[in-house]
Image 1 (tube, rainbow, N blue to C red):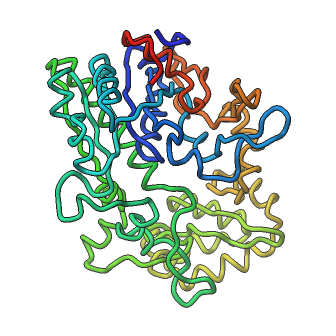
Image 2 (cartoon, rainbow, N blue to C red; image 1 turned 45 degrees about the vertical axis):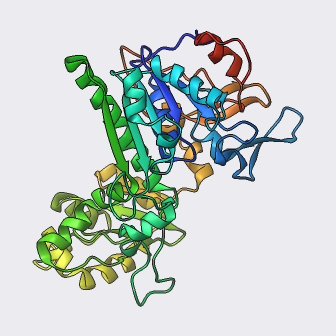
Length: 401
């Protein structure tokens, strides 16, 4: 049995995690946060690639760097680690034994790799017909690019995201930009978690598992969302617009006298309140600006008026006034400022879990809150092979891999 009694809505579920880097591990961390027993299978001696993706590295209690990279620590909370050489007959036997007692397998090997080792869906389904198997790759299990390797950055480029992200042409700093976090990996992980949970619910009705094929390029194409539909209904390709929203105005970054503010007006009523705070109530009555379609059409006229008005205010004073009026706005916080925000602190998004090397390890925890099945963040990201002996005992093997 696991060393910690899990709690949460998935405490009855076991996940065999054959994934590494970000998309797959993000999915399995979500499932671990929900209480699932996640067994992370890693290469002996090396482990998940992200263990070496530093600096920075977690420091031990004496202040010395450990081998635990920050990247790895961001995506492997709540799991148990076993080291297994899946290229060996012994390792393959261990994986099959683990699959026999698991509900879900998540893997992100190149297409065909697990089949060579007799660990693909068909092979494991023969052992456990109720198994839910999710394969996460760059381009999916079919198509002309199915065998190609992929990383988040490349998929952001191929999938159109960078064509609509970055400063607009003609402005200083113009050019395509990637998102500041690996958003395709994260969204693929989210879709993976949704997919396996949907299959789990369906299995309760049919008794059958399923085989789920997830491609990062599919995910990126899918979450082009309004930008994709803007092109599909208009025939005009979206372009980079900086921070300006293509369909709703005013939504942009505006300079105050002492800093920047994000303004996110979402309807005509909020625009009227904005005008009152700025001391320009007549703008809300101007036919050129009174409705959102008019403001989008006449953005070139409205924008300089707003920028001149914002420049008359100190940032914090204006934010306070807009908040009081119910106009959506925000400061542009640094990452340290995020974790110092009173709302973030109140919600407990940063926790410190016990860690065998560092004493404690900081963790940005799940945003999910359940009244009847509260989540317990009781297991830090594991050391490489930390639970090997324990897991082998679980499946009736006493020897170390």
